[in-house]
Length: 50
Image 1 (cartoon, rainbow, N blue to C red):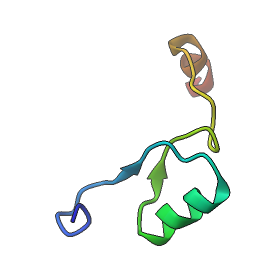
Image 2: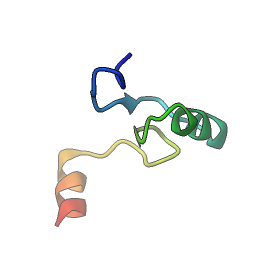
Image 3: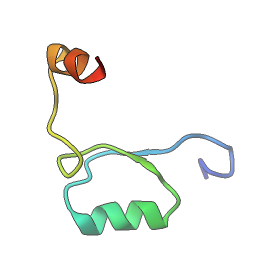
Image 4: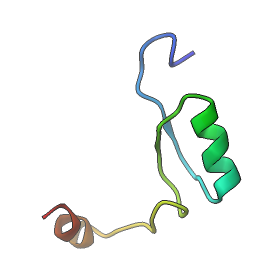
């Protein structure tokens, strides 16, 4: 439904390759979860963005 409304979709809680593949096959190309990276503090995120 979100795609039909032209929303950007974010899949949360992606933990393994199978879940990542599934959400990508569903057309969702933005995600978060331990498979992509661990949670970061604001200081770590600031360093990463620099």
